[in-house]
Length: 246
Image (cartoon, rainbow, N blue to C red):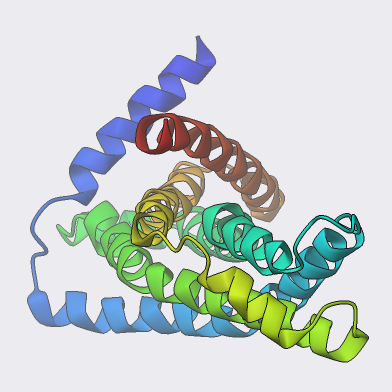
């Protein structure tokens, strides 16, 4: 019953979030601030992990395809599919859920326990719209660029791993990347990214907005928000795959 209560409060929160901003200038300032905090500051971790995980995927694929009848181009093909379909949209979103989700919950939760949100409400400001909507718009607009960057660096990391290790050649890898290219797979990955970005922005915001207590409870809420965001991403990933690919 407690879960149903939280689900109900979550959707009630969304109704208040998606109202027209009272001041466009204030919303724009908050939006660009969130682009910086939630998007630009995540480029480094996404780039680093994408590059090296792409290399690991390519090496592991090559080491498990040692049969004489298996073409080496299959390494590039398998790495490309793995990175585009799952690694870039799903794994990178889970990383962002941990990094960004904890930040959102702690920042909003701190405002709640220090009564800053109450002060906004007293001034007649829709605090949910003011605090959450810029985060939602910023993540939905910016995260597709992060995921495309993750795809590129993952595939490039696979090529680099082959060039440095000598396990497979660059010619075979690039030929595998070019085999059976389907643009819809990138569309599928970006659709998943938009859904995941919405979850990353809203679930931690919910946990932070309704936190009660002091700094200890804010820390617990941050941990809880990361866990539930990852759970929601995994469920959404399953259902989106069923609807879009089967």
